[in-house]
Length: 360
Length: 194
Image 1 (tube, each protein chain N blue to C red):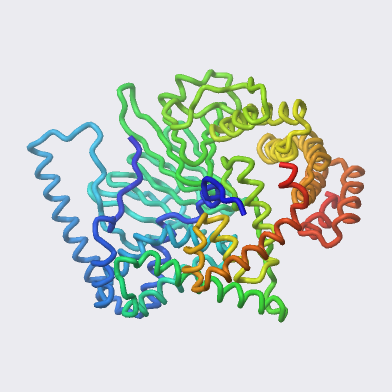
Image 2 (image 1 turned 90 degrees about the horizontal axis):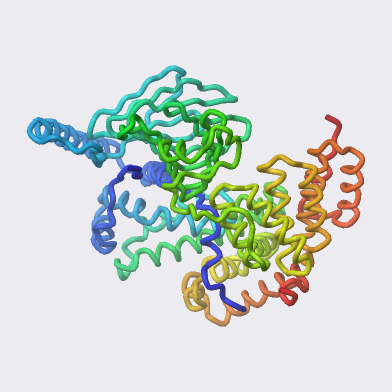
């Protein structure tokens, strides 16, 4: 067996955040059967230390002018407070942070000196407004709900991610910023949109400078992003380079550029072993991100034809049916469904495919 | 400008010190060990299970077993590896239990959603390898599955896999050969063509 240069696990999603670990610890603690009074005593002691530290800071600040961006001060981690009622406004004092829990289990750690409001708390939408400071959010995935964090005139729309947002004073006024630790978020500002992936950051000042007023989609992350190489359209002349271009574009949230590179790879190098997977990934981008179901169906069809890997071929056939279903092409959908079920009657996705092509 | 908010960071204290305190039922030391090794343990368990289903339970059970048997840990400085061994054993029991429950009709097995496992920015070659592995893991015997994930996904050396599983090197090689045959059957001529 060949051993990969980097463990494959490094390419898997990071399913857990430190907030999850905090939650797990609380349950472990309960199951260990320790008397709670001991913990309360410890928390009280830490709280007292925090109060003393805050007092020292306040006294010190009267003598020494603080730096423009005061460092965040470590604070004890307390049990999260429920953050359920619409209109609730939360403030954290200097030197302390507050941990908040939303009804669905999502968590927010409001940094010291921060202010945020739960502007809307409904089944279909949660809207949080950060007025001051920074917040570390761990938002659970819920496809039926829109989760929005509004900071100044920017909206961060979240499907399920761990990220930090902040508002701070800059030379030209207030600046909104975000940094994604896990998952992805969309940045909406006026009619401009961009996607931030894990490891990328965004600041409103840099973005305004780089985004024209007509930018409507696929705006690149700001110059502060760690992965913001300027490569754009696919100019590579071999399959491997095209894959590299596509991968880099996907990192940067430039899904159209990624799609172009993958499309070019499939057309120019159909016999390359990577072509089938490239076609499959192209279909995924077209269906899930660009919402071009017709094009996606064609890409999945290409993947089915090119794939020598039976697993990939079955997955492509499944997504092919899904794309036709979403493109409202009933006849083609039924035909593709019948073909799938004839070939993979006990396939991994048979149930999902059987449920496709229903009358809407 | 942006920094993740600081948390109590026990990294400055060695495992040996924390374990010694945890043995004395020091709650703060136990919490420090959870915070220090929690992310590593979650990653390992997530890879072994292939989903978030039962992930919290597996992580909690692993830490509980570790804290309850801390006195048996001969080398406190080796807490991290010892914890991983407990996680592997606990995961093995959980996977066996799941299979039994499914066979008895007491549990509806949830298929692994491969697309939710793979990072969006993963190279395509890695995506393909992960897809192949997680498509077959549910069909493999538990020990074969665990050996495959530890070796191919975690990238552990053979002797590490043997130690984590409490098995001989020969057994690990046998399980990996079985996993390779299953992978080859699924992938057909793909690897040869690639």
